[in-house]
Length: 397
Image (cartoon, rainbow, N blue to C red; front, side):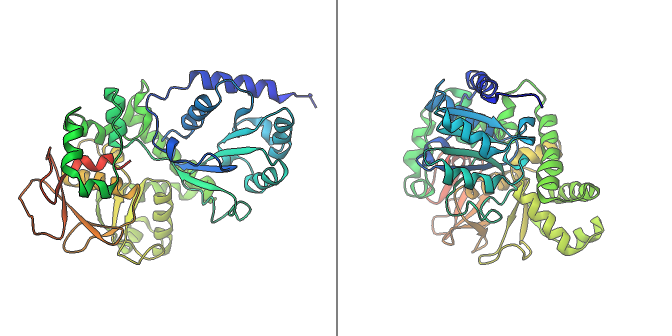
């Protein structure tokens, strides 16, 4: 067999990728991660920028320092050579931070990460994983040593920063409720958020809108890859069931947000209720759908309502047939869900957050000061007691 010295080739690829990484907005997660951990996992759905995030970190923290190296398990080298072997060579040559992409492509990845962790005490490994992967639940080898984080698509705040060159900060939900007037005034003193809002709802969630390609076609391709690779391959589902999963997604999104009629979906897909529930769970893990449950309930129980994960998906599937109310409620759920536990609302509201605060979407301000509910009001530019501009929820991360 041909003798291979992999390090030079991997380093050259690493340097080229780092030099050419295009990350016009610094993701909030970069400052939320505790980088002192020796094993860090970064989960995210296909298309949200996990590879760019890893390379951006390498560029910021290490520049051209050979102590850091990015590798991708797409490389066929790893069909014949083990991660433990490679990490050992990297470590012997002074390497200290290994960035690993496409983790699910490597068999026994978690076992070998554990061996690397135990064998090379000064080695840090940062790896990316699909949102479909149960990185902790299904991988006991690393449960006690991995620090796990989630990378999401662009928030409305990040989208505005990218479009304007501003550096508007995020605001916690507690701060937003306690000091909404000042926060809203501060933001509107720098930019008119409503002038960017509809564009964000249509194409602002996935970073590849920056590429010179048709966004909707690219997103539809990405959605299919989520089902064909992230769901079928990772969950080891036979290819013959792909058409059922695709049709299920279409039927749900055609009625989203809406009640979860599992029996009717089972009839239309020609499968069992249990299988429908499993498919919905997989689609949720892939971040194509969101499920809304009553407080105290969760999978495998039936959700109360089903949502598209984000508004961009709705516009890609139904470009000329997305209702404003459905679109706005989906935006609100997605924004709240990023940092909080969200269940069905109380007191006739849409959502209950962290078991204590209720929110309801509305189209206009009506001065309901005595209500037990906070209203997320569409096209509202400033706050009014318990009425908050809908767009402001896009600043939660």
